[in-house]
Image (cartoon, rainbow, N blue to C red; front, side, top):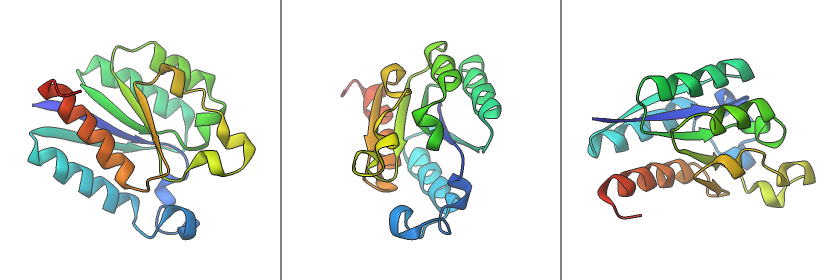
Length: 148
């Protein structure tokens, strides 16, 4: 069974409470349960992890490669815009990463328009709400079937 890591960064543990006009009313647990369910339908094991700490996210990226994870769906939160350490961790592993953002970061504050993660990621999905995570999972499912 292929393994997918669903990785969420800072403040995403506050989904459902934090700025619901931007991020919606669903919780992180709701999101995780949905992606686990969709993964299971396609014989994908989804492993979930969230942290507000940069080093823990880096450790999880390294661990993903070391334990044979086949793909990573990653919302780095604010680390997207300035964490060269996370960028280097992604560049240093042989595990594809799809960067996901719930909001359209390009229609928000100017500092959100730059991603240091995107250049070392397989792709980026932004602005489609929680469906963006489902689309990232779908991309990994289609990749396995050779339907890129």
